[in-house]
Image 1 (cartoon, helix red, strand yellow):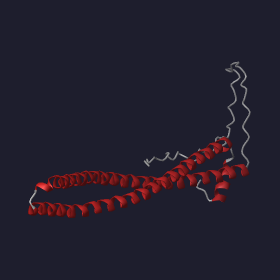
Image 2: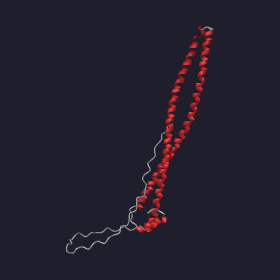
Image 3: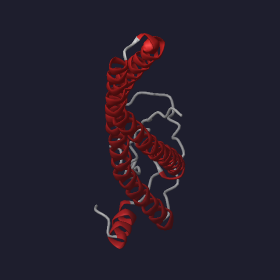
Image 4: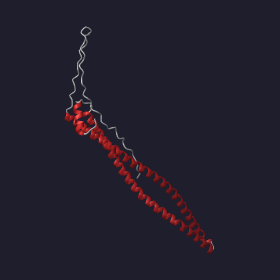
Length: 222
């Protein structure tokens, strides 16, 4: 069975998006009555309601948890990629060894065909040969066969051992593929959670005093 090694989905930038600071307003200077010009009335947009301290605490806690999860996934990504690279290197060695085995297989096959042809020649011409000549040919055949058989046995043994190694390797490739799928799913899940956090928490105004108090309470950097 042919196996391929895939790559991980890149860990997205899953950092805090930041909460909008509540802006303080400075009183507008009084208009000079003499130089005042008539202008269209300005319709002020309704001010967005500030987050409560409990809401702010919840958002900051969740933000920190998401950041920690992202850091953990980044470390996991290195582990998954290291496993993939190790398997790729092992696969390259396997391919190199397989090429060598193919070359040896062709050489052994050629020796077997040559020996069989030699045996056929002996059998075809045995009646024409003197007893000593036939004996010499038979001994030559046996000597060549005795030399060749260990090569065949060693080759078959190595082939069987490689088959077992390939099976174990393929099992590891399958396991790495499952680990990769699980990792990529975790990345997508984290991104979904970050997107959900943005909808509920990002760009919402809050009181700076609440922020300072909550960060101190949670032990977060200001």
